Image (cartoon, rainbow, N blue to C red; front, top):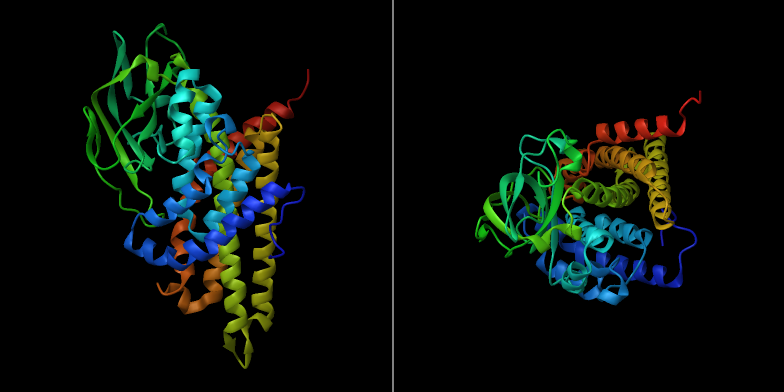
Length: 401
């Protein structure tokens, strides 16, 4: 076991889960990740293996067939998976956020119906806030849900759905004016709808179209899509929690735990970049000795290792705070911001250590170099994290009087 990114105070069960996942990553993900990524191929066999390990139900309560584990266990699992291939952690993370939102906010009927099949990986989740013209301004969404008897009719276009094609359940955020008078704050007139669909592309149910995969620089394998609703009819009992106007809070709660997991992804990718850099530095010789013997390279390795360790510590702290029942938006924002920035820097240093070979598709670091930038913008950009952090600090340190 490597010295870096160790977590003190884990139970025997947590250590066993993480050991099993790491073994799976080393044997089943790392050997095939680069080939699948270059083909932009969905990792079907890997996903089936993770279903068998119970990863899709890791945080779903035992009464619904899950493992009932903590956010910390989940985040450390994501860190291990991202170390192997970040795209696989994305497939898990969006599913996890929807399961978490159902567990926290769903009606009893919704929990009974969805969670057991989500724990088994039979139903796979995605969630949808963003829109083509939206950026980070969630309050400006234009997708709309209008009540029509026992149903709602949904219209609008959504963007950047991870798992958009492969998922069979999408939590979709829409505006609903029902019961909200003119002038209501935008965030109080949003509702989360639980939309079931077929996996695949094209018209996946009447009124719902998934046009196809968005071509991306990195983060390949996992499908990222648009979602188009044209008079999509959804039963009223598929409003999350059974109450309109709560959607913004549902989504922000989900994103808060999602940010811990994006931080965990950054930690995992940075760990792998360090491993590749430190290995290559000991194998590559220049001027009659391994480049690891040159002080310039040792300085890089020292900086990289320190960043890996610091990001991991902040991610663990954010997860433990949420698990203790405390508000963790400040810690989650800090962890996500630091881990994504450090990940980019560690990957770039590993790329530099590889020299010209880092530019070759034969070497794994080339893939990591294209993957790391996604963390700077996913689950809220670095700039949004700093806004959240700054506002929360001013709340905590407000001058009295």
